Amino acid sequence: MSELLIGTDGFLLDGEPFRVVSGALHYFRVHPDHWRDRLGKARGMGLNTVDTYIPWNLHEPSPGSLRLDGGLDLPRFLDLAAEAGLHVLLRPGPYICGEWEGGGLPSWLLAEPDIRLRSTDPRFLDAVDGYLAALLPRLAPYLATRGGPVVAVQVENEYGAYGDDTGYLEHLAGTLRRNGVDVPLFTCDQPADLARGSLPGALATVNFGRGAVRNLARLREHQPHGPLLVTEFWNGWFNRWGGVHVTRPAEDAAAELDAVLAAGAGVSFYMFHGGTNFGFTNGANDKHTYRPTITSYDYDAPLDEAGDPTPKYAAFREVIARYEPVPDTPLPEPSKKLNVLDVRLPDSAPLLDAAPLLAAAREADRPLGMEELGQDFGFVLYSAVLPQAGPVHLVVERVADRAQVFVDRQPVGVLERENHHSALTFTAPTAGARLDLLVENQGRVNYGPGIHDRKGVLGEVRANGRPLARWTSRPLDLATLEPLAFQPTVAPPTGPAFHRGVLTLEEPADTYLDLAGWTKGNAWINGFHLGRHWSRGPQQRLYVPGPVLRAGANEIVVLELHATARASVDLRDTPALGPTEE
Image (cartoon, rainbow, N blue to C red; front, top):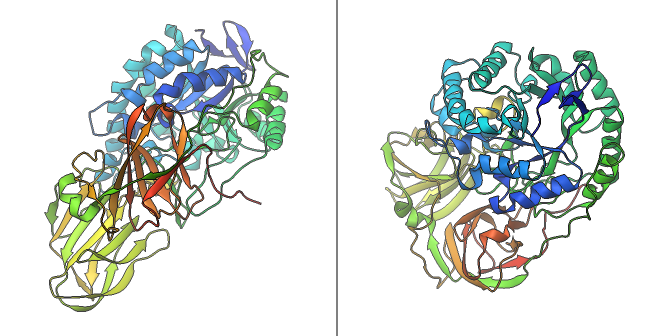
């Protein structure tokens, strides 16, 4: 590959003027068996570059560990990008936002009760430095200066929207340089935050979805010389549970893209291909009200969640072709999809009964938070004893994020952070009745000061005004379901339960798991965690990548936290992301 240089008015590649035409493609949101396909389609749309975040929380799930395997094999992704003829803008954070759990910051940082994230707090910087010192040498061969595809590396991410500590940014830039990053560095910010988030010696770039002429002028005013680059051109948007499916017309986004390119600027689509928040990886926002992001990260992008072209693919390619060379290839065809109805799930395993098989509990005089338990994702089951029979007014100081409350295994209510719940009233049948709180981490906040987002029961729990003591806290990360003992379902289980069935296929293909009639929970196929489902929508079907399935028997497991109207699921050949905005 070739080395990228920053010229007075633009980029230079091998001494020749070069315009970055890029798109965001997050390897960690795409099944690794689909990477080559998605990268080829990026090149086919006319992109010469892709950009990707790097999620620290997945690559270093515990301090001192480093994962670069399977779906986290970033070196393989970079090899495939080079094979497709694409340069790469690498965005390692340490904070990435991206509607990703905690903005990519690992939850174990929050085990320090007063740590200041995204700052010069020595505890934070030591953790960042250790992570980058382990990661970057593995990526050094992929830098353009050594013949690889990575032409530039980002410092932090939209820092101006969070703080103005230039010393923090200088430290990060120094860490990158000390670990061998010798390609150009850049920052990205929204137009109003350019002064706060920029770093001397790094190229300032801008993020926006509309107002190209105005916003590029603001970038040029802030940075009189150098390339104009829109690092995030927001051509779509993300969705939250309880909202609508947000879309943007292709012709509107294409007209704005034309204005960007006509101004001589480079561009990177956010997103080119959104992918999926598999497992528990979705983030959340909290601007006075907590709002978790859905499982799908389709983003109304040029490639949809299954990698099929949308109207934006053709519209953007047409605009790009007015300014830059575009491969003379046909538009991609949609992939084959499965359609299988009424797949029965006849076996079940009640969660409260199975919990001891899944994890050991810890005893303490108060509920322990997830971070204290060394847990990143999933649920915590808290248990205590109610001292007396009769009416109970239960007050939970803080729930993060959703607590189902049970007395002697019977459901008595739900406390939701989103709805600012903190209390409920019920009747204890006897003195010594068992109280259980099943608390779900629905996604750590990924934007703003709320990133210090600890999970579980936080603070005191009082029954009729008196604190409850002697708690057990059982972390349920559901990283594996192998210990579960499924039995044929005679009657619908009361309370949360895993439901299991087997589907026999002749040939695998992409599909969508339809959970109509189910209420809330999670789903797995052949042990692959597809993500969360919730009847409140807007999303009603979960994307199933074809490589997850296999010829022959396929195990489907659905965790239902409440109840289902049917003991079966469907596999559909179309998505269902919900109603759109009028």
